[in-house]
Length: 456
Ligand code: SF4
View 1: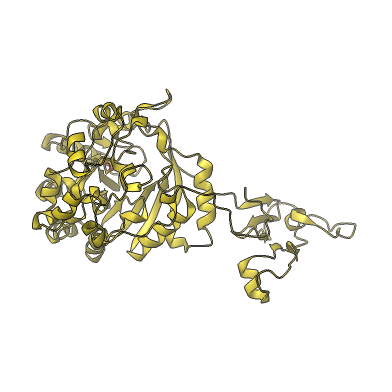
View 2: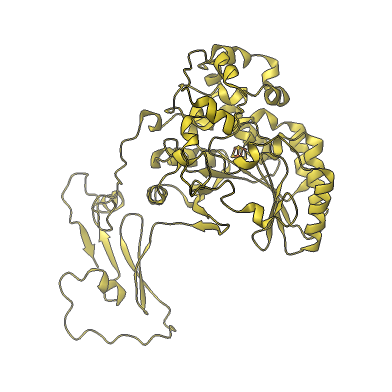
C-alpha cells in the first residue's frame, strides 16, 4: 500500500509470473521463429500477406489448433468451452504464440480455457445493457451526442475477453441495407448525434466496398460531425490495412480510429506498419486496452505498452476495467489494481501516454473514470493536493471566494503542522525529501540520509 508520506516514491511492484516480466516487443522475425513450424513456413508464403486468406484460414477448431501446435495438450473440458464461446484465430496472430500455456499473453487472449465456463450469477451477456439502448436494430444510442453502430459480428480473432460475446459468438453477419437505412433515418431524426462509432465485431473485417457503403451512408447525414471506427484489426490482422483500404477511408474525414492493443508483444513490425499507414493518411489513432489478469495487470507491462503506442503515434485512450460478462470472470482484476497502475504511470510517463482508467458501469451507466485520489483535504480557502511523489501542496483558492477568511491562529503554530497547516494556508507544501527529483535538486547521493518530509 502506498502511503502519502512514503519516503521512497518507488512503488513496490509485487512479483508476477515470468510472462509478465517486461516483455520485448515482437518483431517480424518472431514469425520466422514461430513456435509452430507450420505457421513459420506459411508466414514465408505470398498468401500470408493476403488478409482474405488470413480470414478464410482462421483457426476455428481444436483439431486445426492441434495441427499447428501438435504439442498442445488441451484440458478435457476445453471442448465444452469451445462449444459455448467460439474460437477464431488468424494464422498471423497464432504465429505470435511463444508458449502453449497461460503464461503467454497471445495464447491467453486467443485460446479458450475451461474457466470460461465458471461464471458467478451476477454476470450478464449484455452487461452494458446495449440492447436496451437500441432504438433501431444495430444502433446503440446511450450518450446524448454519440451513437454506436454495430456493423458486423465477425472478427479476425475472437478475443477471449470480449464484452460482446453475445454477438461474436453468434453467426457471422453484416448489417443489411434495409437496417442501414433505418439507422440513417434515425440519425437524421436525431441531429443531436454528432459522433457515430462504427463497431461490431470488427468493421475492418468487412470487404472494402461494404464498409465504404456504410461510411457513405453515415457521412450522408449532415448533422454527423465525426465518425469513429473501433477495430482490433491492426493487432490481429495487420495485413488488412492495405493502401486500397486507406485510400477509401480517407474520403470520410474527419474519421478517427480506435484500436485495441493489450500487451507490448502485440506491437510487432507488421502491427506498427499498419498503424503508420493509417496515421500517415491523417487518421488519428487511439487505443483502448482492457485490463486483464495475468496479461497486462502489471504496472511495468502497462508502461511498456503505453510507451510503445505513443512511439507509433497511437494515443493511449482508455484502460477498461473488465466488464461483467460470462466467460471473462478469470480475467477480472480488482479495481484497486487499475488504480495501482494509474498511480505508477503518473509522473513516469507524459500525460500523452497515460490512458483514462474507466469502469463501464453495469446496467448501462456509461463510462466512469477512476483515478487515484489526488485531493488530500479541502477548506474554503485552500485545497491540499498531492503529486505522484507524495508531495503535498496547498493550492490557495481565489481571493473572491465567498467563504469568510479564517482569523490568524492565536497561538504559534506547533512544530509539526501536518496537512492542517496546508488547509489554512500557513504552510504551502509538505515535501517527501527522499525522492529521485529532490535528490537531483539537492545533489544528495542515493543512500545519503535525508529527512522523510519537509514542511515549508
Ligand atoms: S475484436 Fe473486439 S469485438 Fe472482436 S472479439 Fe475482440 S474485443 Fe470482441
